[in-house]
Image 1 (spheres, rainbow, N blue to C red):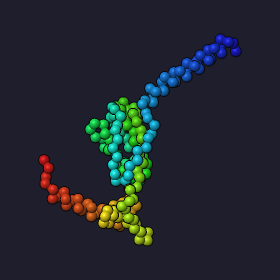
Image 2 (tube, one colour):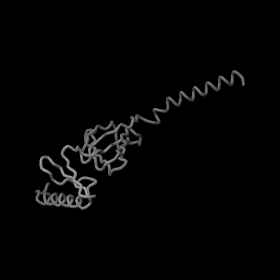
Image 3 (cartoon, rainbow, N blue to C red):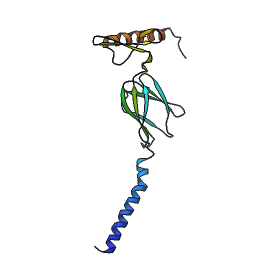
Image 4 (cartoon, rainbow, N blue to C red):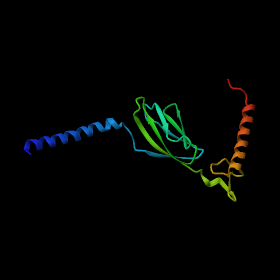
Length: 164
């Protein structure tokens, strides 16, 4: 191997590394580390979107849901326990940001859980205890509570004046 071929090998390796360093930011775009946004079940959190977002993707909409608001705000609502991800894309499909979303259980300071054998019932006690619709409750208790809430909402809607 001659000195000239060694020089060419070093130069081409150096040129390749320099090109990789220059091209890497273009290929990856301004992606930020996947920060975790924590939100309680049945609660909402507000965050700001990066500029020029065209699409927001949620990995599992059964865990969290998002609503884009004017002014670049994003409302994240906890729908089910667990972790999912959210990706913000621009019009070309480039990733602008990515976050993990972790949905936690509700603040337990005013929640009472009653076990009747294998059946579980949840109550919100602030200050009096009332049935609460909570994931993990026994199916019969959950369905009865949900039916009551739906019936109440339907009746309230029927009694509300028509909006124009």
